[in-house]
Length: 200
Image (cartoon, rainbow, N blue to C red; front, side):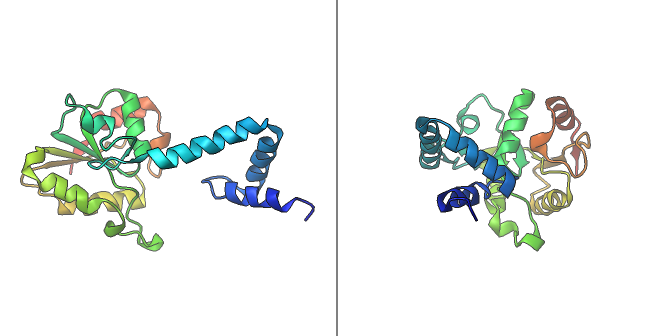
């Protein structure tokens, strides 16, 4: 190849990002090379800083810079309602609606046996322990996993292991498209799905 080895290594690194193929990675690499040196240094510093300062909230597992995320640290949030989502980006989507005042639990993905992901690879056990603890005061669990095969399987698994006698379990209404992802839903659709959740 005529391309410099350092360029190939940069393209290879960029290709590891989600949804970035070799051609897009090459375009990004060329863009970086055409920027002033301080631009790429600023990007490198931002990545390093994020890796060093961002961690998982010790209660809900969404990303935060402190031990607790802003939601878990907020005394005004309704601790009796717990919304279970697959990824932190789903929390951000719900927060954009401005309609939900409860708390969250981030699973870190969905159960997918074909990909070798079972309950033990997710934060399912921490969720079950959190709900089972009477001191947490959780009265309703909203299962807001994606409405696809893996998301539905994850919701059913969790629902089967929750203490139904003490906790109401609901699932988002089907205002969301089947096979879609929460992160890409518009705010109005997400708000309607939340309002129209049903008891399982």
